[in-house]
Image: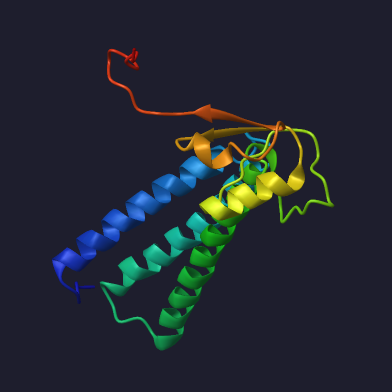
Length: 173
């Protein structure tokens, strides 16, 4: 069994195998440690990285012998599934975080109303102003441009965030 690729290619395959396998073991050890959404993310990540680790093992074997086309096709399928799994897991994790920690209203109109609680609303200047004007619920706007929100009514309070030096805001006479 002799090396049929460059030593650099073998070294790159070994480093990638070591990194992916280490992260896979790290994820496997944490599978039952967390609640949702992190728990589901760890399960999907552990499965996807374990699959990718097996794919890297096939790639290392390919450095020493020419694998049959069926094995190469299997390797590509393994990488495809593991990448899709990682992307899906990350997407579901971010979606879970948005639902539990950063509650973001979904297309709320003036007639829908908003459930009580804190929300993070991100958008372009006009979108945020239109949203604040339409919902009519008590709101705190943290902004660098408080004058943009001054005409929205008594239900909107603004908190002006600005950069200051060590001396603080200077008093003008």
